[in-house]
Each structure stands twice: as C-alpha cells, then as structure tokens.
Amino acid sequence: MSRLGLRRGDALLLAGIVLVALNLRFSITSVGPLIDDLRHDLGLSSASVGLLTTAPLLALGLIAPFAPVLAHRFGAERVLLGCLAAIALGIALRLPSAIGLLFGGTVLAGCGIAIGNVLMPGIVKRRFGSRAPIMIGVYSASLNGGAALAAGLTVPLRDAVGGSWRTALALWGIPALLAALLWLPQLRAVPAPSRVARATRARISLWRDRRAWKVTLLMGLQSLLFYSVAAWLPDIFHAHGISTGSAGLLTSLAMVVGIPSSLLMSFLASRRDDQRPVLAVAVGATAVGLLGVMIAPAALAVLWIVVLGFGQGACFALALSFTVLRSPDASHAAELAGMAQSVGYTLAALGPLLLGALHDVSGGWTLPLGVAVALIVPELIAGLAAAKPGFVGSPPEEPHEPEARLGDGCDGRPPLPSAARS
Image 1 (spheres, rainbow, N blue to C red):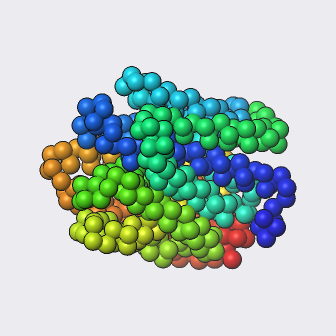
Image 2 (image 1 turned 45 degrees about the vertical axis):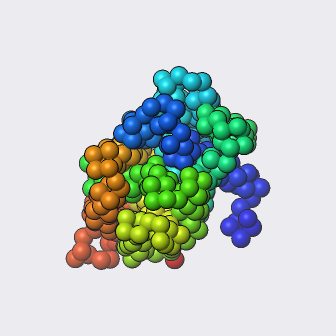
Image 3 (image 1 turned 90 degrees about the vertical axis):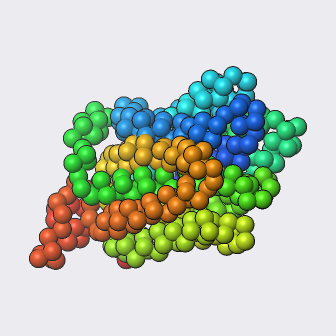
C-alpha cells in the first residue's frame, strides 16, 4: 500500500472498493453454470434462460442514467450502500420457488449493480486523483475476480447444499451484506452534496460528444461479448463432452486470467497518451480465443480459455479506464460512465438472448460463436477511436496545431494526471 502512496483511510477505501466490486458480478455469473438445472427444473428454453441472464443487463442499461442524479442528490457513497442492500435483497428473492420471484430478484439485483457500476469510476476519480487510472485497474480486476468466483464456485456450492441450485444462488447475497458493513465508514468520509455541486451536474451533457460515443460503443460491444460468453460458455463446453463442473471451472479460469490482464492493461494505459496499441492487442486476443472455442473447444480448451480471458479482461479494463482517462474531472467521469453503461449494457443485454436464440434455431454452437467472432470487427473500430488522446466535452484535436494538444493544459482544460502522461 505504501508504494501506492495510500494513507490508512485510503487503504480502507480501497478495501471497500474491492469488496463492492466483487459483489457487482456475483449475481450475474453465478447463473451460467446452473443453466442445465434451470432448464430441467423450470422447463425453460435456451432463449428463456438467455432472458434470465439478460434481465440484469437490461436493468444495467435502463437504470444507469439515474445514477449520477442520485449521487448528486444524496451522495455517491450513500447511494452505493443502498445498491448493496438492493443486491442482497434481490439475490435472496431467488430462494423461493416462484419463477416470477426468480426473475424479479434478478432485476432488483441488476438495478443495484447498474448504479454501483456507474458510481464507482466517479468515486475513484474524486477520491484518488492522479492515482485514479491505477485504482481503476484494481477495481476492474476485482470485478473480474467476482465473476470468476461465482462462475467457479456456484456448482460446488450447489453440491455442498444437497443439490439445491436455488440455495446456491441465494448464498451469494451474504457477501453483499459483508460489503455493506465494510462500506459504512465511507458515509462519514464525505459531506452531503451541496447545491453548487448539483447545479454543476446539471450543466454536463455528453450525448452529443463524439468522444463519449466512442467510449460508449466500446463499452457496449465488449460487454456484449463478455456476458454472452459468461452465460453460455459452460453450456458450450458441456455440449462437447466436458462435465458441468469442469465447464464451470473453465469459465472461471477465463475470468481469473482477466484479473492480471486488467491490472496490466490499466497500468499500460495510464503510462501513455495514446492507448491504441494496447487496445489492438486486447481485441486481437479476444478474437483468437473465440475462434479457438468455435473451432476446437475440447481439444485445446485451456489454451483458448487463457487467451480469451486475457483479451476480455484487458478490453474491459481499457473501456473502464477510458471513462476516467477521457474525463477532465469526477463529474464528467460519472456522466461518461452513466452514458457508456446505459447504452453499453442495453446493447450487451442482447448478447445472451441472441446467442441462445441462434442456438435454438441452429441446434449447435457454431453459428452463435461465428456471430460473436464477427462482432470483434466493430469492437476494434470503436476501441481504436476511443483510445485516441483527449477529453470528453472538448473539441476534437486540430492536426495542424500540435502545440495545442488536449491534456497538456494549453487548451484551457486541466492537464492529464501525471500518471497518465508519464
């Protein structure tokens, strides 16, 4: 901690961020390994199960725009505590046998996740300043860690509680309560938002900003691929003769590999103005991994999973880092995160549903995976555009006037943090 220049209060804040981040993925990726159980017990089709995995993503897309409003009204740290309560309650509602409660609880947890996802980049930007890009890497790595834990441990949890998939899903609500307790000290660390802060927020709008849309498209396309894979990868491997438990562990491995790749790419992104080279590497690794899963899923499963996990973790970390690196201050970071996740997760919600429907139509996984591979092309185009230097809310760079580069302080805007320029 000392090497990062963290005081005791900062260390407690970082621990809270890590635990909160873990809980922003538990309720989503815990469903994928239990797809066979849900289909058998509830009589659901692949498309219906895809809808179950899509429900929290739709919540993320529809609720995300309200997060900055709530944060400026009540304070981001206070709202985040409410998000953890919503996640815990939503997960608990999955325990009864009613299908309506299963879907309803999933949506409620998704609403808490949606707001938490949007608020965290702004909190990191405000509380850590020039160290924010590195801390975003820690945060994104923790999100991948939460996804990996849920994907890998849900089946063993089901077996440990007598084969009850409902109990296994409900147990993931306990960490949300623990995270809420650890987050409580942060409510005393910041004052309630002032009228001035609320008025400042009202003047920020990024919906006509080209740079903001580039970040938004990258967030949406990488999220679409990530959640599609998280939802169906266990079923894909199981269809090729791999046991349910092993398929869940392979999915978990992809997310575990995403942890160091998130940290690495966030660090590399913070050390340069132009992130296009690292973005190209991340998207390329995702493409290779998906192609491998499509062509030879059983023969070299571990290799494809490692490459895919590296690429997806890196793409997510870069998309999340851009909400900070492309923002001049915490208010813009919150607005950009809200916009990117609102549009991005609405787009991502189509992924599990689309792949499930394509599987039902084709009777196999070649067509769905082929569509996923094709989506790599627009992801690369959007990513390369988002990786160019500059801030949202500012005019495009003038190629004939290099001395007025965005981020060097000459354009009247704050300079980039030193960690992002060194």
